[in-house]
Image (cartoon, rainbow, N blue to C red; front, side, top):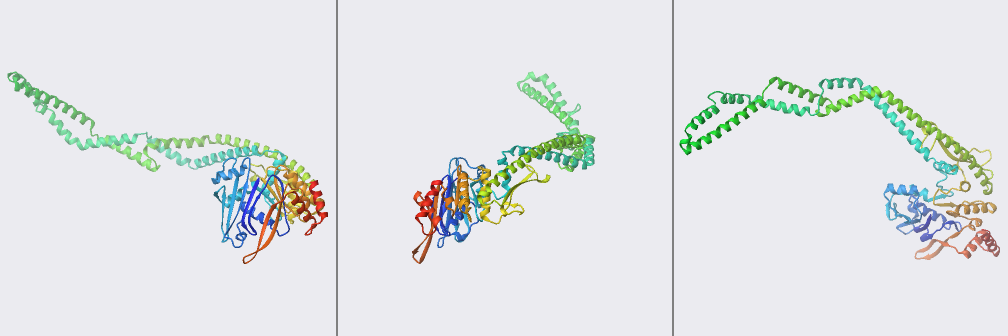
Length: 558
């Protein structure tokens, strides 16, 4: 609820700090005293358009700050703050401040964190509901009427929202499957041709690297074949270096025992024979590895060219070709088995749609029944509020299929007819602001609605009425405020007497340097002050003893 409103340099208010509590608070004062300034200041906090004319004459800037306290932030407010990155500690008051410059422009802050005016406007309906001559929030907007009726009916559309979501998802899956199969069918001939081409080639994973390595090796063999052939002739035959070394070793072996140096020479020659044998073996193995087979090289190069060409065609790597084949086979399989899959998805979507229609129809019946009860309840409130010639109707209209949604297949709007024989019109189209406020009061009493804004304000709801009607308005305002917070700007002593707190708004003028300065002030009245103010409201400028006595009786009855 609203606990504090601080105003600085707005029109006639230089500095003002007001505190508010639960229950019914009334604001009174003579016409022109400045009651609208308080509402304008609160409107700034709630995101109304910044008007530099609101800045007090001679000042550079103005500000309005409102403090709200909640056991827990309303869900809509908490969600909006989370999306905007605004952090508020649990149990911490909600402090909204709006600064306005005389040369135009404004800034907004939520608990000293910069905020957009759009964010203020977004959370305003959960904070303050204002009903007045020219400004109505909440109940006049048809977008909220369905929520109010559902709450009155005791229904919970959340289950229907889940069913709607399941239906939408089933329809989406069906549409995606249809689109996929349609696309595949359009490409079926091309898929078959591509798959036949790939199947004929039958690419294998890792094949490109293996072919490239084999081709490189064969190309080396081709390049080295002449040298290898010369070496082969050199190492083969009776006159080869290895044969000569072996002959020399045998001859030396016969005389090696004759001298130590001959023995050492033989040992060295034996080692040379061994090394030469190893060299001969490695040359033979190298020749075998580097065999140059022109036919095999041509086959490898042709295969490698074909693989790379088809990979370029499909814009992929050669090693990705096997996966391309699997994807093509899967697409073709999807075409073949698509009808069965579509049948299953169509059945699921049909079943989900039937569940939604069944639940939406049940909710529609609940709404129609609740609308009848609500119409009767509002009608019972109209006569005491001097609206006995008016009629109220809750229009529950079934929407065409394309406008169904998570909240059902109905539109809900509160309609009124102010005169006998007149057509029903939307609640917000009524001509008289005073009548509109009383209609809203009747509707709120009938709904006994506790899930709206934390603070409700009625601005001059009693305009143009008095006596028993004013008493009826005061009684209903007090009932509505019993479990919440309601503020009423009023000219009616009967309404003022019902308030639990009473604020007097007054305007005064005083001489100052350069002329006369006019200021608006607001005073929280005690019991004696309340009696005097209600007496003034009863008698006018001159308060008589009779007016004071009548004021005392009003307060006692209240």
